[in-house]
Image (cartoon, rainbow, N blue to C red; front, top):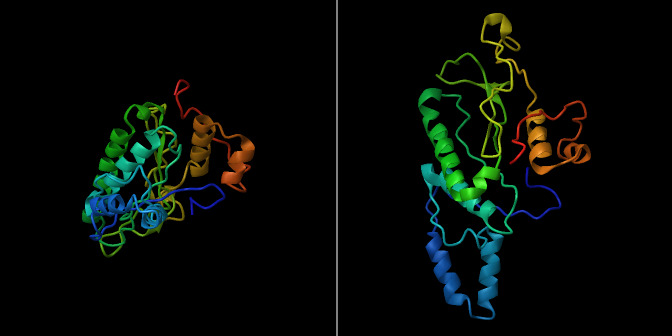
Length: 233
């Protein structure tokens, strides 16, 4: 959904199964590169599949290493001269209706390793980067009968990167007492996620109010959160 719109966008996904190694694509491309018919056709096919030039030639992980590999490649693409200014990445494994404690170990570890890999891929560009980590929904406060939690309301978002004025918690903690829960089941929301995202877009990328409303239609009453980005970033 985030890639919809008139602007061109490229995508790439490290598979969880075992597709051919990227080196095989490179070898076939090299074999056909000088052929006037198959060379351009194969190159166009790779680009259509998301294997743009900055992605080809790298070692891409699979399975539990997939997200860190994706993040590393994204960092290299963002840091490249003339590369994109924005990247959106997605990882799964957070829908823990059953056996939440053991199941969360993988996505938390992958997210941690992914942020490290993204920083490594960006290199010196990390100093001018803001990374917003968000999820679609929170989880219920109470555990269900299968050792998991169900879809909830409030959640947590993280803002990281060298451009971020960090070290702060930008919301109130309502507590988990019986009378403090939202609808007697969820952590109560005390901040607007769109305010956080709008603040990043306004302060880091310079979007004005009109542009912010195109990104978040109907959010006229949601003011961008201030003080998120360092003034010298």
